[in-house]
Amino acid sequence: MPIHKGGRPAISEGRRKKYLLSLRLDAEGVTPPDVREIVQDFNDQTLLNPRIKNAVGHISLSFSPKDGVRMIDALMLDIAQEYMQRMGITDTQYLLVRHLDQPHPHCHLVYNRIGNNGQTISDKNIKIRNAKVCRVLTEKYGLHLASGKESVRRERLREPDKTKYEIYGAIKVALPQSRSWEELEKHLKAQGISMRYKYCGSTNQKQGVLFGKNGFEFSGSKIDRQFSYSKLSRHFTQAQQQTHYRATLAKGFHAAIDNYRSAFTDLFGNMGGSVNKGHADAGSINFGGNIGALPLPPNDSSVRLSAAHLQRKPGESPEEHIARITALLNTVAEAMAIAAMKQRRKLRDRKANKPKMKL
Image (cartoon, rainbow, N blue to C red; front, side, top):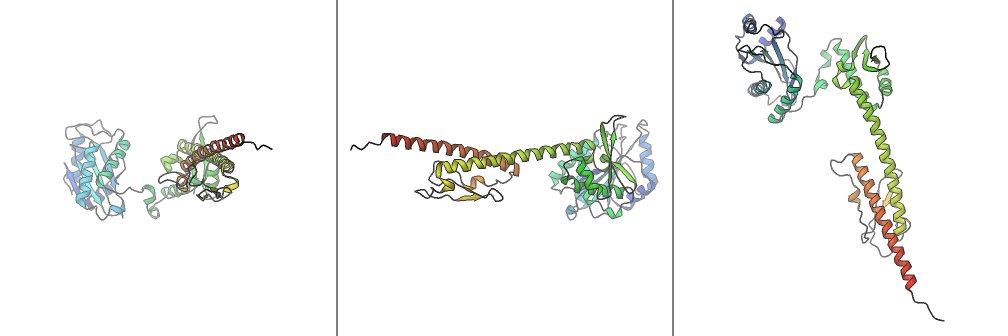
């Protein structure tokens, strides 16, 4: 999947040379490979709108290594050109080059934010627009999703990025095991990572979190946007709600099991003891654990329940499964209770209508 990187830096001498040493895919309004002429071409066009401070736009489009075999220059150029059209980068100077220094295919686009007619190439909401465009292109061209931070070659990182990625990895592992700030802090402390909060003015209201290691300290959002204070707080709230919800589900499920067993015994006898008396046995289903086997109504009973009804359906989450079979067991238990009541009523009527013997 193509992903956008970078912002709008000026072209450094090292970057200029790197672009020109790479494979040029396309260019418009500039005269490569001469570095000075390219810079002069860009500078000349910026005079059309000198109010724009950041006149040079830079975008990196990166693709998954899984697309390496099929990502020939022609396909990369097609994707890059369509990306530019969808992002509104048109009627302006640009240079598009492919880099071959990484295991994943990628290319760099340098463009003039001042168009050929002096118009401004907008960078408003560029991250949001980029994400939407990349999703469209990923689906259209059948590309693999880029793996983000997990694909970074950390052995090549220098400080402070090296430590930042170490903290990122530690939080990524610890977070699923943590239901509160205290649990997260405990997990990170075991790996030599400190955690402290930022407060709003002189109040006790927390508004940020910082993680530290090796003498470096980063705010959660600088490590990754998903680790900002607000998003982590939301994660812990949802985790606690999920824990409470699961406990409620488990309580309701066990109550349904008890109701079902009681209704089954009332209708068919002790754990199905009377099932064999004129009934076709439907067997049982084993839930394991402290629940064990649950007897099923006989096949010729008016109350229907089979093992298939209690199995987890494709795509059904564990919580959805428990909620569904809890409701099902309660419904069947109610039906068995009604059937047992009717059975007792028939028995009473039969006794009441039985003729008395005369002595």
